[in-house]
Amino acid sequence: MSTKINMKLQNPTYQTCINACNTCCECCEACCTACMSNAEMAGMMTRCMMMCRDCADMCMMASCMMSRGSEYAKQMCEMCADVCDACAMECEKHASKMEECKMCTDACRACAKECRNMMR
Image 1 (tube, rainbow, N blue to C red):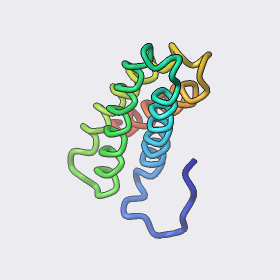
Image 2: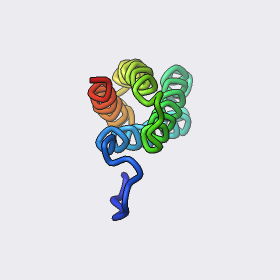
Image 3: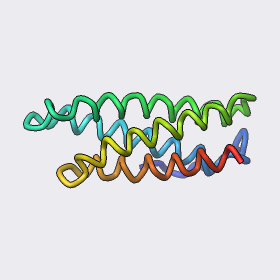
Image 4: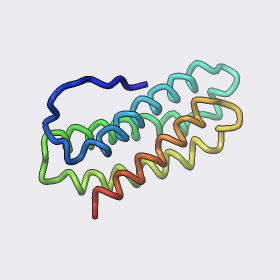
């Protein structure tokens, strides 16, 4: 998924969480696209697609706020963790049928964990 780029980071303190958020965003986008592309299951996947879209946006916002050292980064991470948990629960329902949903479930759980670590 993400590739490593050698550069000086704006805020290396949060880098593990930023990476988890970016990976989760990518997985959510891939999952949503796969759900939309699956004509057989598209009708059953509406909530999954909506959750993935919300989660991708939340993860990207959290990543940006951490990158710039926002004073609201921890609050955003708390909200991001909650959305990631909800998305993981929804995607898990379809994980046995779609690999993208399995990957999304795993990425959401990892991101939620890292975001909660940020609040300590």
